[in-house]
Amino acid sequence: MEKVIRNGKVAVLYSPGFGAGWYSWIHVPEVLFDPEIVALVEANKNSEIPALVVKKYGDKYYTGGADDLSIKWLPVGTQFEISEYDGSEDVRLFDPDDGFTA
Image (cartoon, rainbow, N blue to C red; front, side, top):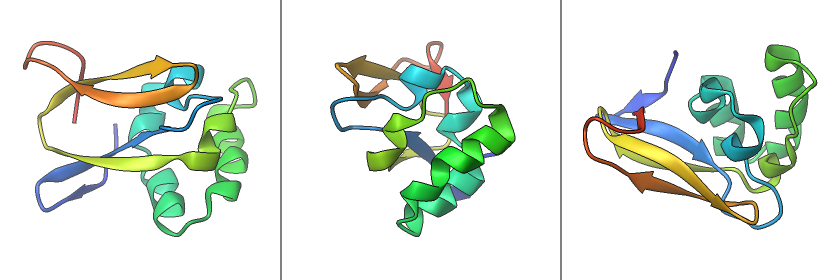
């Protein structure tokens, strides 16, 4: 899985706003790290993200969480999960044997 790594940290995509989650509503691990999506978020071009998701992953995923997509930078190797409440996601850190790996 391709990831954006800068200064020893990995870009993790999540949607902190209420209403619709990002990973929690798509469940495709690649959307947590996708370099093209990271670039769009950094360029404030979130409106282009849904079309990119359809192109890369298909049209069966709800992408409403793209509107407020954010990046959390985690040290390489950090174990984490995406928790969600009412569409609002958070990046929760874990012990080394649990969750996703940054």
